[in-house]
Length: 106
Image 1 (cartoon, rainbow, N blue to C red):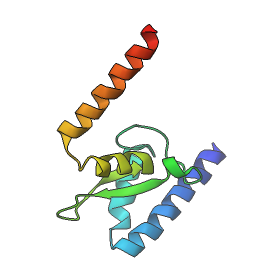
Image 2 (image 1 turned 30 degrees about the vertical axis):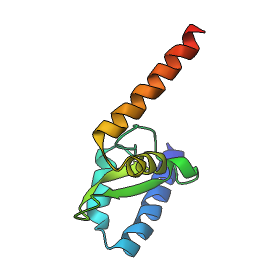
Image 3 (image 1 turned 180 degrees about the vertical axis):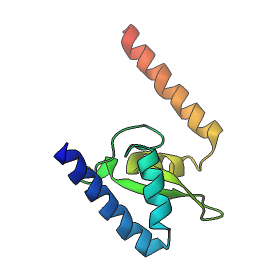
Image 4 (image 1 turned 90 degrees about the vertical axis):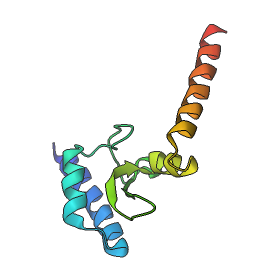
């Protein structure tokens, strides 16, 4: 249980620095983080500031700057890579699924 507390403290410290630099409310970000049970809101992986791809980052709506949730770096980069366009994300997911099915059948 102690390692969880240390991990949670490290996550909050990391996010507090980001909030300070971006002007986001730490209270809002921390409340969301606890609601998400310290997991990425998309992939549900446990956030971990010691692993770059699982490092927590607050996600904001690009046009309004409104806070949306806490994501891992990997999911946030994926969202921005596909311009937050559901059709592009769905098409890429379908490609990956089809590729995996081809590999399983081989």
